[in-house]
Length: 337
Image: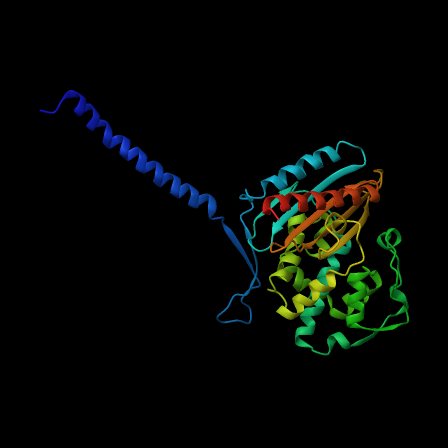
């Protein structure tokens, strides 16, 4: 005869066992659901192809940022909240992305800014697309006419050491060097005319960037990342040209932003942008300063874009430097190097 105690004990074993098994199964599927980020592919399109659909870049679902880099998000959020308590800073946005595995975090991701000179990277990439089909393009001599000699605020605040001179003749390659290293506006004007509006617009379209005529609403930091991610992944121009372009971008002379926040021996391929804006006719003049690019952290290169808006360029410079340094130091802590 089975005792009352044994009956009670055996009656509880089955449901408890089922609960235990169900818990394991639920944990397994939950972990799979949280580990497997939804991936969105951005592709060039199949026009001209029968069997392929060229990949430009992929991105994790915007609703699933990385938990591994939450410490970076937290420390940057605290810094930005503190920085914005003063009257000199209006807006700060940051986008961080591990370029090898696609994990990302952001702060104030929906704020938009004028990209300004950062769009010279579009001109650069467009020129390389032309060079892929015309091997002599980069060596082509171009005479700079007198009607493109102009000076913007960016070259007043951060003057060009060796500007392109009107009346001079330069190769396309030399103009591209000036375009990126010195952020030369004359070089940008000459190259844009030479490359052609349709080719440049195709680059915007392919990389899913707002077209020039529609950028009054601005760019987010994540949107701008498309350019550098396509170069790093060598998915839009050839491997060798992508390598050359990122090397060129590592030689830009602007060192008062991202570069100032990392050790001196670290390579940074980046582009800065500067803009003076007036939101309303009677509103005070506000300034924007941005610096975005790839920081070659050992074994884990990452893209960092810092976009700022305020009243004083020197203060905005310091903000970008601080965010770059905080990001680097926290990543060192996470990676334990």
